[in-house]
Image 1: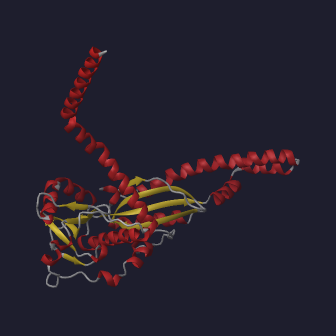
Image 2: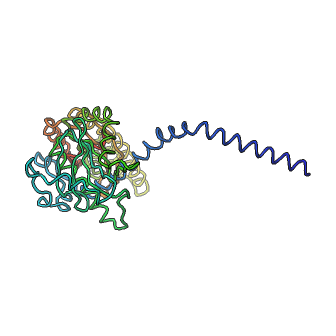
Image 3: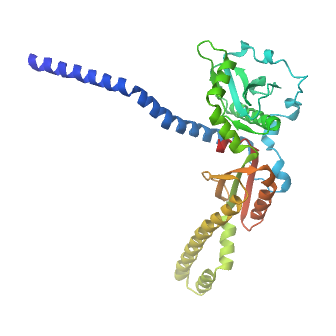
Length: 358
């Protein structure tokens, strides 16, 4: 018994040593695997959550597509951030002192809203979350739009407070787009932390330097474009009525049903409903292909997003579109034509910073 116990302990010791050796040899490999696979998925999931919050907070009504609508801001943003709070863009001589905005009294973190296509060093004023002073940190023709903060994330159990932060985040992006034309948006609550006693602004500048080629490539990709959200809906009831009017097969079944006794009439009614359902599915599939292609012809890039539930209508497609500014009006005309089709309606939101394409 004692001999078996000694053998078991010896084996356990060998197993522990082998596990430690494998863990030591594969530590770097595992770190790279996590960085390459899990982190991108996590970031994508967070971006999806933020996009849903923004859409819910800012885009609750189905907007009729008219030429004027293309350039309107979502009313929810205006209510949460009145124009007088933003103020006019300061000129070079009247800008608030940058050194004051950069003081470390608000913490050693930098909340980053976006990277802009400009090497300009400018203070945009107290337009950030919780009235924070927003300014830029430039590097080699790019700049990060930031405000000073602690290294702790923004948290609140009050859902309305969080929605307000998200709305202000979006509003700062809007201001940055007006000022710099092209920006690479960052997700809500992106905080860059200072390390090894390096000044926080220098940490941001080092990040811009280290990721410069990637950032410049993405900036070139979206320059001159704006992102719009397009959702196309159809009303099953209206589409069913259209099908019943146009389908000879269904009309024939309805005529035969009218002359049947109650039992047989019920069976014919089921046949009619089945035929309508199948034809509706066929038309919806064909409509998706046709409308997608019509929209695709007017945009620079397009992404198909998950469809969402609606109380009264069925969402046919949910698209994120990257659109050249000079093509926005043409796209609006195409969407207006879709909106005028029997049983169809369109929700058109934007312009947004290019979240879906960077």
